[in-house]
Amino acid sequence: MLSLWQAAMGSAQAGPDDYDGVEFWGPPERAGWLTKQGEYIKTWRRRWFVLKQGKVFWFKESMVTRASRPRGVIPVANCLTVKGADDVLHRQFAFELSTRTETMYFIADSEKEKEDWINSIGRSIVQNSRSVTDDEILDYDSRK
Figure: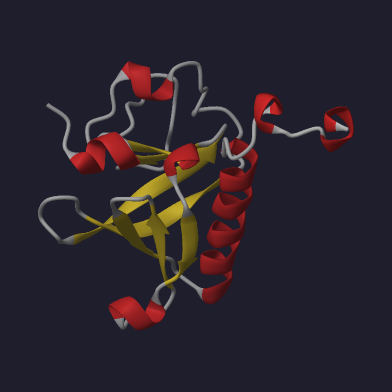
């Protein structure tokens, strides 16, 4: 059974369904080392993150190949906000990624890295959000 975290953020142990068709080993939109807080045991660990095609993957190693298996996946379409969290964690270069039910924390290596990740993930959230579909757009002219 999936925890709320796994359902909302992506599973801690990513399975092939989580990265369906995403060639995470190819050129990413953004990639780099971040320190991430664990899901169950709240320790901080350095992981290699890859943002590609609306998903954030993380790995133990930076050498990502076709044979690599992500340690976790976050579909950005499920995310509502990405913002700085220095004040929340009382740590420099911290940011958070939130869904309706969960918040995940990260620490970058510099202010620039933090801003670059926030901007890249934010752009991906906007591109992948399903806020308005064609069916939901009201055509006011046709209602006259």
